[in-house]
Length: 139
Image (cartoon, rainbow, N blue to C red; front, side, top):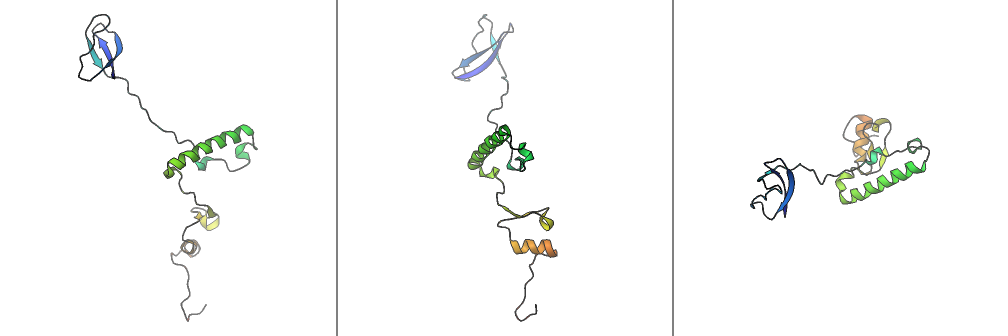
């Protein structure tokens, strides 16, 4: 059954269910003829991913010195986020542990699995090839 919004010539509005979209419009309870009117647009199926892991507090002050309500709220949000990431792994982002984040790596942290020699050579010497010694060469 399809629901339609109808309006009669007298100005009454009502909703009626029709078996097919090709059925004739029913008459209004007042007896006047009716016409179909566009229904209100409703957006369904939108998802809210909630806060990301980057927004989670990382300091004692961030959780208001361990205030139980704040800790409980963040625990609830992050548990929900973990379940969402299990279903949709693309939301998880890069979850590799950070190995270095200071000095050379401040702007682009070094993460587990990164090509270590290349990144260190680039950060330290400004080159993309690590220093190597050739056989028979001097050190």
